[in-house]
Image (tube, rainbow, N blue to C red; front, top):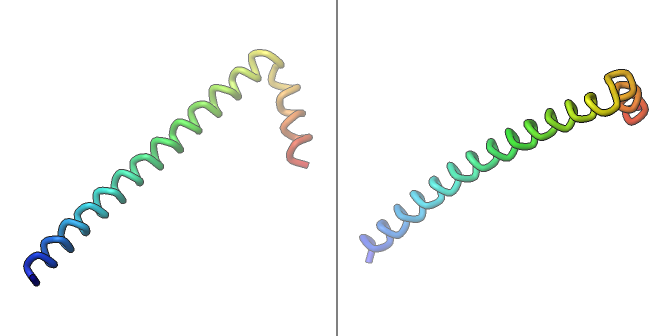
Length: 63
């Protein structure tokens, strides 16, 4: 009985560790993707509207 409990506990610990690792990797990947697309979007804005208008727009949004 106690051996089974230990095995189950070990499996759960390993599973949760794997889950945490996967979650960490997913979080990092998500942040990287968001950052990449945000930068791409910024460059697109600059390309279309020009740097000055984009800066003014950001200033308006911030204040």
